Image (cartoon, rainbow, N blue to C red):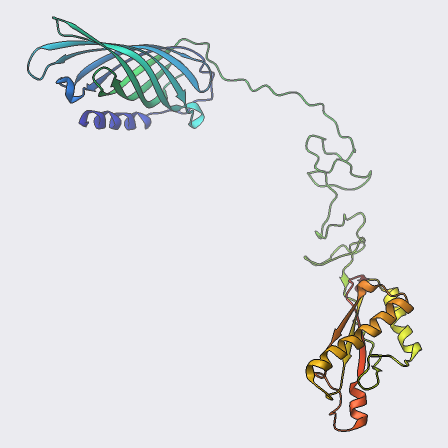
Amino acid sequence: MKTVNRFCLYGMVLMGASVAVAEVDRSGLYLNLGVGLQDFDHKRDLDEDTTYLIGGEYRFGKHWATELRYYYTEVDYNKGGKVDVDQYGADGIYYFPMNDGAFEPYLAAGAGYGVFDDGDSDNDEMQLNAGGGLRIYMSERFSLRADVRAIYGEDDDTVDSLASVGVSFFFGAGGEIKQQQAEEPVSDSDGDGVLDSLDQCPNTPQGVQVDASGCPLDADGDGVPDSSDRCLNTPAGSTVNAEGCILARAKEVSFDLSLRFANNSSYLEGYNAAEVEKVTNYLKANPGAVAVVEGHTDNTGAAAYNQTLSTRRAATVAKLLTEKYGVNAASITAVGYGEDRPIADNSTAASRDANRRVVVKVRNTDETQPADK
């Protein structure tokens, strides 16, 4: 393993020697030459030793390649004697181009067989290998390669390791990759001075001034083009109408009709029709307005009962406004407050009568009125 670590360090040094080159077409044939150290599984009873390698690699494009390669090692037995090791294989390689292709990490895996010849007999075995490395391009035709592999011997269930460095010569066509781009016709459909290929607002009306993106100028950023903006200096964040002018909330309007009911009753015996019509006319003229019908009682009887009674009284008035006067039911809410909100102290018949009431409060929350300039 010390050998593997040492060659990993060599690979890191080679990475620092990379030079930036333009992206080129890597498809074609490579001749790979290298030298490394192979550390054999302890079951083989062999020392680690120098391995020489040669390979023919064919690159299919940006990522994929295949290599036919041969390793040769003359290694010593731990107990004396030498063994010639010949290893043949075919590998698949997947590249990860980086830094505009100046250097390319890769993963590799493949299969082959090894022949161990000690002079007296040959021992053949099937082998699988997997690993990875780094290719560093020094020029279009010349590159360096650092590689680490684990080699599995199927016959004796062994795992050897090989770390190597080497050089490669490229015999392909090479040359920079030409990016084919379809030529776009030069046109300006809306005649605003910005080409269609750059125009983010392609249907600008004739005569409207535009920015570099072809969109109408909007100096105050209120979403209304300057050509239609009657208020050109609107403060940032303001809500504006279609003419670019600030919208202000209309003044809230409140109507208190103080409709009253008989004791212990939700029946509305009489009311001021003229006052009610003020409310209904306002609601019809302002669709965004909302009405809250509030029902109230005096403190006679149980609080829970009074709560229910006040709700019935509010519902009676809401029904009057919708059924008799045609007010939109969606704009009316009926709420009962029982005896919780008296306007008199309930100490006399007159004060209790004042507390038995329904109040209609109307608020216009539409923001539809331009503010004064």
